[in-house]
Each structure stands twice: as structure tokens, then as C-alpha cells.
Image (cartoon, rainbow, N blue to C red; front, side, top):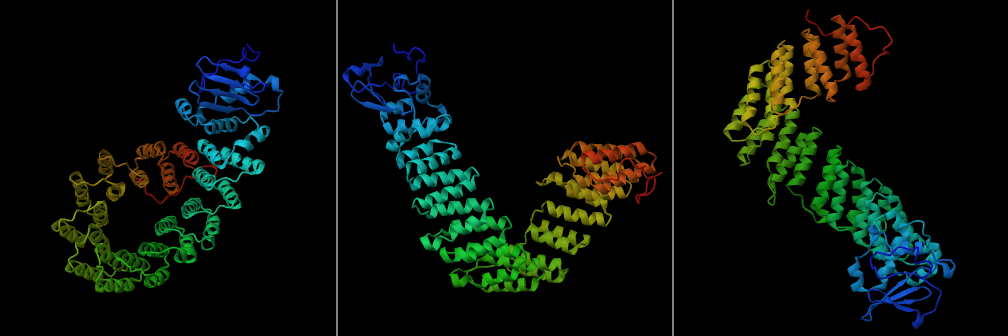
Length: 566
């Protein structure tokens, strides 16, 4: 037994029959031995050639370390031979059947990269002879660490003058961007260009979307500026997706820039492209710019659809230019290829309601019905809210039921709020009771007007009962609900209950605002409870991050506008 075999444990790696040990002897028949599994081993200067009995050869060259040839440490060889399981490029059976030296080489390089204490500089000769663009791609494919992959890419470019394939760069750029390493990706992109590779459409589209989403718009402009010189075009779907994402992120100016400088010149805009741009401009109030784009659609061979008209009409109505919106409604009615829908009419109705022109709004509603278009729940909600009167609201409610139009949560909320303003709390509560037989998920803003009305009327117990009903329907009180209850109990002189409600808000993380806490403190002081007032102030300062005067100053004993019951 050789000196190093006694200190090296049996290798139980991918090929348990192989011992990859170098020894300074030349190839000869005397240097061949047969392993226990029936393989022939040929000992050579750079490694063993292990041959199966059927004549198939497996070549595993170990690296040429700068060590004494007769004293290669078995621990070093063992570490290389037993590859890290996380980076196994293929399984044992696959290795045996495929018998590919290249695959073994890939695995060795991956292991050396993962185990950073191995220095690649010591094996430049070996790597320069065996590393190719194909094998380097396989190495990067099997490394799930993008930074490590970049380190390998840079090492091979600088020390081995290796020109990597476009496929390698494409893989690495996508991996870096998906890992959020966009600054590193920019460097790798420059490497790719210096190696003589041009980005294709797919790469440009991916990089533009990825860099835009992280806000690196300067690099996006740089990429897109290369489109004309390299004769690369982005497809319409990708361009629209990018524009749509920018508009949703309120980056309308960036979207307009891309459209004017690149997409309208180097891609084919369609109707969706123009709809996105019109929507973005209307959202920021630039309806005149949106109208200019609308007028230029036909010069690009595009025709507006009903979505285009609806978006522009809604934009005009939002800035109170309802007459222009109404004019567009008339225009779309005259077109043969498209017809207005419920959204078209409802947008104009909303515009007139905002201006208080209810007669015009009613006329548009009648025109809508005469055109054979059924008003929706949204249409009725706008009209009920626009009239603002209980009598007209209930009439529209009855009309909805007659037309079998199901009210939604906002229909209930608008009517309940109107009834509470008119001090018709019993009717408002009856509307709340209807929710039991409706497929509507109740919201706090539906209950808050009723609770507020009952508290102001001094009916605290009834207000608490409504809160209990609310919680039974799995509708959690919000900050407004708790504020109403705290003020209501203070007005009634029920300070202990007000304190209990306040403590609950702090516990569930729904603490009231500064005004409510100040009102509670003032009421506590008026009720002769300075210690509780001090505790509330201290708790609000620490847990709710509310600002109060110095706690060391004497507590003021006067003043609040909230009357406290004797």
C-alpha cells in the first residue's frame, strides 16, 4: 500500500471504484492495475485513465498543482474527487453511461469555484487546454450563484482570453436581473458587447422590462438607443406591456418618452398602445395631450375603439370639461363600427352630477335607456349620490329593484349615509338589516354613519348594539368607528367605557388620532380623573407615536369643546 492510501478514506462519490491519485510515472503496462470492480487503471503524470472491462474509457485529469510530484496530498485529491452534492452536474449512472470527459471537467471546475480555498490561478495550463465556450456555458448553467458565475466569467476572459458564447451571456444576464443584481448585469452586458455579440430582440425586451421595473431608466434609454443602429425591433406586445407597467406605476412621463422616441419609430403601435397612452395622460390631468394622441391614431393606421372613447370621455369629465365628453359621446354614436356602452353613458352622467347638473344627468340616463342600454348599479349609485336627497334616492332604489339590478355595497352606503344625515336612523338600520339576505360583504363605512347618529342622539347603548351586530357579521370596526365611540361615551360621561375602548384600540393596533386622544384627555380632566389622563397621554406618546407637550409640565385642568354629561 502506498503511503497516502493508508490516510485517505475510501472514496464513496459518483464512481466508488475510482481513486484519482497522481503519481510521477510515465504510462506503461506496469502502471496498469485492475480495480475491485473490474476497471483498469492506468497511472500517469496527470491522473488515472480508468477503463471499463468492455473497453470504454473514462478520462479524469486532475489539475496540475505546483506541488512536489511524489507527494500529492490525498486530502486535496479527495476534496476534488468527492464533489459538492449541491453542484452535481449529473448523477452517477448518467456519468457511467455517457462516459463524457467534458462533463467530468465541468464538475471539477464547479467544485473548485464553490470551494473558494482552491485557487484557479494554479491550474491555468489545465484550464486553457480544456475550457471551451461550450464547457464554460455548462459551468455557469450548473452554478446557482450568479456572483460566482460572474467571477468565473471574468477569470476566464482575463486569464484565458476566452470569448464566451452569446448563450452564456444571455443566461447570466437573466440570472443576474432575476436576482436583483442589475448593476452587475450592466457590467456583464458591456463584456458581451466587447466580445463582439449583439443583443437580440428577446434580450433587449427582457432587459428593458427588468431595468424599468427597478427604476434604472437611464440604462433603458441607452439600450433602446441601440435599436436603429443594430436593426433590432421590439414586438408590439412587449412594448405595450412596458408602457402599461409604467402607467400603472404613475411613470407617465417615462412612458410618453419611450413612445415618442422609440416605440412609434421602431415598433408597430396598435390601438392598445394608444389606449394606454391616453389613459396615462388622462390620469395626470393632461387631457389635451391625450386628445392630440387620439387625433393622431389614424396616421399610424389605428382606429379608436369604445375603450379609447370611454377613457377620453372619462378624462374630460374628471377635469370638469363635461361638454367635450358629451360631444365625444355623440361622435361615437355616429360611428358604424363601434357603439357606446354603459360605461360611455355613465362617464358623462358622472361628469354632470359632479357639476350639480342633475337635469342633464337625468337626460343622459333617459337617452341611455332609449338606446337599449341598461343602466348598471354604478349608474344608479352616481345618480343617488348626485341628487343627495333621500326622496329621490329611494325612488331610484325602487327603480333598481323593478329592473332587477342588484345594489352593491356602495348603493347601501350612499342611501344609509343620506338617511342618517336626514336623521332617519330607524330606516337606516332597516337597510342594514337587509344585508342578511344579500350577497354583500359589509364594510365599516356602512355602519359608521348609523353609529355616529346614535351617539350624537345620546343612544349609546343602541350604538354599542350596532357595533355588536357589525362584529357578528365579521365586519371589524375601523379607526373611524372607535373614534365615534370614544367621543360618544365621553359626551355621555361614561369615561370608564371610553377608556376601555381606547385600550382596545391600542391592543389591536388601531389607535385613534391625535385629536381623539386630546379630546379624551380633556374629558378625563373635566371629570376629575387626572391620573387616567396622564396614563392615556403617556400611552399615546409611547405606543401611538403621537406628539404631546412635555409630560413633566402640569396637566391643564381646563378646556374642551366637547360637553360632558354631569
